[in-house]
Each structure stands twice: as structure tokens, then as C-alpha cells.
Length: 463
Ligand code: GLY
Ligand code: MN
Picture 1 (cartoon, rainbow, N blue to C red):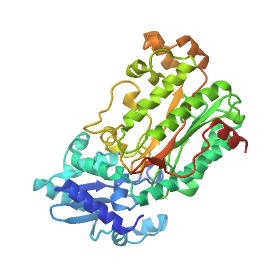
Picture 2: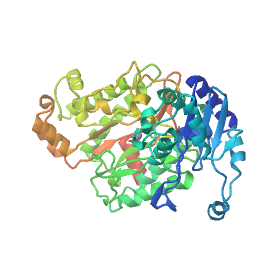
Picture 3: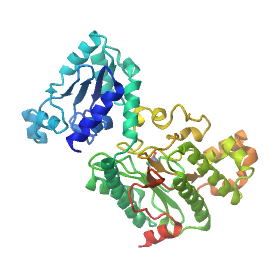
Picture 4: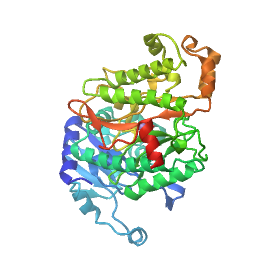
């Protein structure tokens, strides 16, 4: 938790931005795994953590802007809670640590919101992503459960996105901390990347590392020889010489900040010529994107430039043909990279995706594309100092997608479908770093860069 002044200042700024009405932030409850007493590790809501800082379940925060009053709602621990789960300072003391003076029992939530509704006050709340919070909203707003998300406040959502997108110095220090663990996870994965080792053993080892230094992983680890499946959580393979291992993993530190790195490693640390060629195209796309990312540039244009490099690199290898601009217009590179170049990173690995991906990543000026590939870019708008983003180009050979395009003659003038057959079984290569936009350019969130050239990765595997 940061100092209380930070939370007080954030809430003051939020109040000024939303201007009137009642702001309600719901914290998360425990989530049952297989019965109610056996829960997943508790994860607080990120916006709640950002404004209130308290990471225990069953809390809510209310800010009555017009009456200039704020409340933390929650119940003190019972003797049973203390016996089974341990003691904590009183809620009153913990609220004081966030600069909140008034604590009320959780049951007051319905009373306060009910009174607000009666006097036609606007209740500002965020889109729920857990059914528990959707149920609470349904109850206190007096609407059917399925309608609870309908009254979501755009003003509050946009105000929070504006604030959370620009990372302060203390947040950057937390992100750096998450980056340090993410770095260590990937170094271990590279060293373990040897023939005969199971994917599960590597995934489990690096997830354990994340837990040993912080809260958990920032998302379920993606680790597989079948890197062509973008979010592959199947770790049932045994590493084979000649294959690639794609590892996309990161940590969530004790203050909930995330890291997210990807490296693709040749099993045993020996790349074939073909693997090297594809790796070097992806690396060029990554390095050029990092060189381009600076205030005033849209990330959409950086994504398009990465597509350009990928198309031209594959054209040099004889896998595609034709004129670059026409290929970019037609979306040809999406056959090989059907995802976006990156996303915002912060308290969530896809920062604030719960608030709406397009609201986070686009605005009046920069609209989201609809064409396959381009439309998957989560963050496209103009970059500003303090934005933290991932840069994660990739080249994948997805046999089913290639066969679909071949059968439907999609962009057939640009693609040597017959030559691509040799790449079925190749997998995919993705490389991902985390950057922060500075006033002049950008820099890595964590100062040390993971091995990234073929030579560096080969050396890391063999070290
Ligand atoms: N690291 C997973 C993702 O960005 O979707
Ligand atoms: Mn990512």
C-alpha cells in the first residue's frame, strides 16, 4: 500500500473529474473454487485498490460528491474469522491508513444507495465482471440482475481510465519490481528449455517463482512448443530438440502491479536457419516499434509499421509477394500475426480491460479498425508520457487459418500458399517487452532486457 496522501489525492482528483452524484466502488469478495470454504487466492478489484488501497474481501467505498462525504463499508472481523484466518487491525484503523474517516457496516450500502436513488441522485458505478458484484448492484439498485450493468457510468469509467493510464513515479517503481520477477522467471525458463523436460515442469517452476516474490502470476502462463496457439495454456508436451518453446509469462507483485514478457527459445539452445530467419524478422519488428514509440505517435501507426516489417521480411523469404502498401491495406500480415502489437499494462496485465478495451485504447481521434488482425490491437491511440505498454510482435503458422485463407482464396495474390505448407509444425515466435513512454521517447519498465537475439538466447539456454 502507498502512503495515505496518495489515495486522498487520487480521490480528490476523481471527485473533480466526475463533478456530481455518488461514486460507488465495489471491492471483490472471495471466489469459491469447489466449495465456499475453499477459495481461489483473493484478488482485489484493481480500481478499488487504486483509490482505496485495501486488499481484503467484502469492502465497498462510497464518495458522495455533492455532500463531500466518503465512507468505507465493511464488517469488522468476527471471533471465528480471527480464529481461522488470523487477526488484522480494525477496519477503522485500516481505513485511516487510506485517509478515510468513516467506516460503516456493509449493510449500510443498500441504505445509502437507496436514499440516493430516492432523491434522484446519479449513482456512478463501474461495469461488474464478477457475478457477485452484479448481484450486489442488482439488489441495491433494485433492477434485475441482467440489467445491473446497463446503468454503468461512462463519466466515472472515463475518469478512472484517464487517471490510471498515466503511471506515477511510485507506480513505475512497482511495475519495475514486477518486471524484476518477470525477468527472473524467463531466465529460469530458458535454462530449463532442454530436450526431455516437460512444459508443465517449466511452467510450474516459474509460476512458483512469481508466488515466491509477489502475489501470483499476472495471468496464467502461456508456455508451449505449439506457440501458434496464441494463448496456449496446455503444458502437456515434452520438449523436443528442433522445436521452439514459446513462453509468455509475468508476475503480479505484492502491490498488484503486473509484468508481461515473451521469449521464444529453441529447445536445447540451437536455432535452425529457418527459425533464425523468422526470429530476426520478429526482433526487427520489436526493435523498430520500440524506436518509434514516443509521445505524439499513435500506437496504431506503430502496429502498422510492425505489420510492414513482418510482411517485407516474409517476402524476402519468399513466403509472400506483392507491393507492401497494398498488402497492408488488405491485411495480409494478419495471417501471420492475428493479434495486436500490445496493450496497456498496470494493475492488470491488460490494464483496465474490465472497464472496456476500446474506451482504454481508443478515443475520438483514433478509432478501432474492423479488419482482421488490426481490430485485435487493444491500444491504438496517441502515446503520452506515463503510458506503460507491451510491445509484442509475432509470426505464427496456424495451419487451419492458412488452409481457410487458401480455400476461400483470401488475399491469394499475396501469398505463396504452397511454400507455407513447409511451416506447418513450426509453431510461432513472439517476443514481448514492457515499455514506459517518457517525455522524449520510451524506456524499458525494468532496466535489464531479457536475452533477445538468437545468440543471447542460445547463450542463456547453455549457461
Ligand atoms: N500476455 C498475454 C497477453 O498479452 O495477452
Ligand atoms: Mn502481453
